[in-house]
Length: 241
Image (cartoon, rainbow, N blue to C red; front, side, top):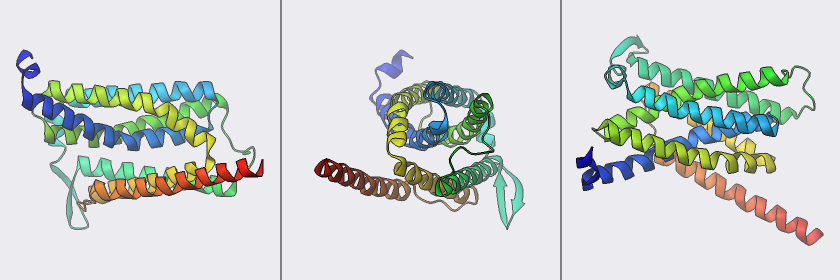
């Protein structure tokens, strides 16, 4: 352990891996913010805390079973002429879940129903949100940890990077959730991001890799346009006042 503290290579690996884990965690934060948006403020805060705590637990738990995790890349089934591993199947399933969930939320937003007749009671709604958070945490944790395994060869570096990234996610999740709640149009944009992320996960599962740089550029560009729209609306309201 002492040799790691004095090793420039170890520090470089830690900084690089932490940055990557934070970038990969953006997906998790966006989805978490959308999920808790319909809960009361006190429950939303608790759901974010539980969700991010589970994200940390899942990541460290997956790191502790590296041998099994690496074995997930072994083919287990053949479909459409492709040999798919458990990792591929989990990514495909998780991507389809994201697409279905985001599409359902977009449909609800477009209909803009007031006081849904089929809305779940508060306790059930909270439990349902936590269940969805668990599913998504598992999917994103797998993607994140496989990236960590490919970048570092010491579990201490991987665990440190994961803990730092989860701390950053915890700090940023509150402001992101409040921003989404304050500006409803950003929720539609966030849901569109989730569809995009879901498609990329499904594509990865079917061995068609979409570079994450393209996806994040599209997200940043769209977010910048939405930010300009928000500023323009604010300025118009001020002039009207």
